[in-house]
Image (cartoon, rainbow, N blue to C red):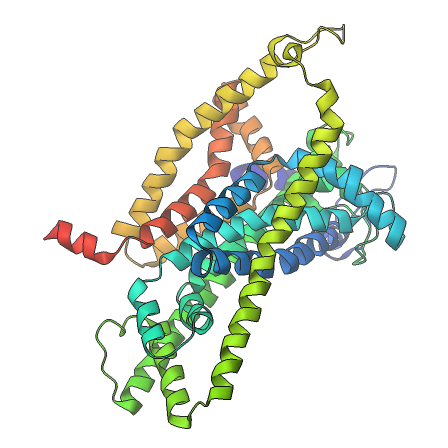
Length: 477
């Protein structure tokens, strides 16, 4: 915040900058004799790509998580989970190159899109969001107590009704958190939009047009593509606005989750009072009483053989549809790997991975880059793992539900929405210059640690929620 605020102050106090124009103008011309700084074109490009990507990824990701958690067998789950992890491990630069070389030509040929277009970025970023949504939603659904499923099935509900009426509402907070983290990933993505979406800032919501996002402009400033002046300090103002937007999204989402929980508690209390139902173990779980109320209502109104067949037909159709969401991820991964292998297989050799850079192509290699990546990964893991797991243990096992802990959770989620290029600016200011670490693996690993913390904390906390309370009570006793 300090880094962004300091740079933004120098931008807004510049004589060529009008604060009102910054928030209301639809023209972004940062360079030239008469610069105009209207952030709306950058904001529209960011909203266009992140919004459509979320609309695609959220239903696919939640459906895939529901299938893996409630319907997939052990063998299918053992295949599906690693498949999702492979998608999560592919660098964003690879996604961007694939979008530029494979997806973008399809939109140009069949839909008349421009060479650089937002549609290609939307498709690829939606796929990049899937691992986050699937993984965290799956952990949240697995954290739902097993007795809730057993009671629902015992009351006559089908597996599909149990999954959608009991499990998903009980895991709603984790599912919403997964979508938020995915949205934050889409808002903060830099490399894909930089390669695919283009560099023309225009106020449009047509995905076939070329657009520039807020993170893409920051990247251009950081790489030296923007001449010195207010256009450079404008990147800090854009980054600060992006930070505020993601923070507000998380605040609203946190209130939605809290409202869902409170409404569930009130609704179940009223239902129990009206129907005089007293069931131990369900007074803390809104979904259990919702399922109970649903099944009792069905029993009171009567269900015939035709209705039973319809319910099981609905289950078969539903399971087939959500199972197909896994195939979408598998198909994209297969096409991506096939394209990468076909383009790069001929260039693979032992010299490439064991030699140093050289002006002779036959002797050139990337061994230093490989070792640098390994060292950077190990240092980041060394710092991020204890911090992330420790924070998750504190939030789940020791912290009370107070304003402070809710603020901590919002900050953790908000960190995931900060573009990587903003972290780079922060690292350059703090670790490289103020702390004097210079351009080093240590400085890079510290920045990557901060970037990795949100995913580690949220995933670890959802995993801790899946541990039965009986274990804690037995240990405490």
